[in-house]
Image (cartoon, rainbow, N blue to C red; front, top):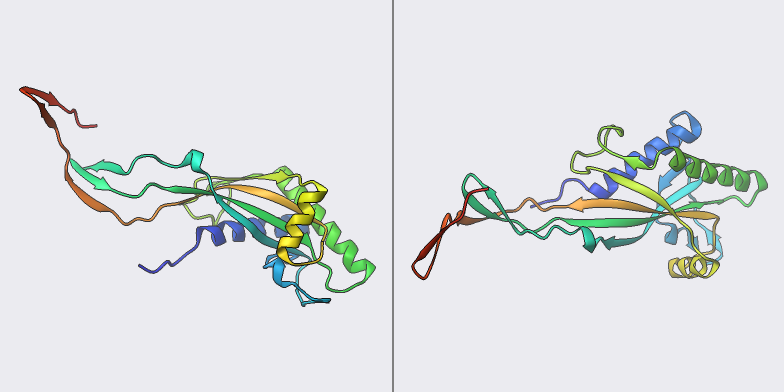
Length: 203
């Protein structure tokens, strides 16, 4: 089965759209989704049309929220389905200055502060309060992650690039559920143990 849409991309697209609208009050795009690890190439910066780059720097499963049940009941049938997996994404917003000028650097910092202000006033996103968010995404929330100097150094070293002024947010949580199901047969309503019959009431 071909995958036609990405929950990750949809969530980030809607957040970027609302952040840009909040920061500029227009359709100007100071924030966009780019792989920040590819913006540094030796001593040369690659050309990027945006001031703020949004990159996913980590994807981790939230095992504490993993659904335990593999079976569901439907019309007196037992249906087997792999449990949903819930993921938290670590997002890096970096102030990118392709032009080595004071004005470009100042504008990048201004927009980075705008990102912080945006998430201060809206940190929870649902299909109700965020038009365009897929219905499968029940709720996502973003929280600021404060990194130490050592952690910041490790992050940028792993990305293979020069440090840029940046903020890190953790986005909770995207639930992934493959809709493929297997019929496990009719629901067992009676179980005989020795000579005793135990009735299982349908749920």
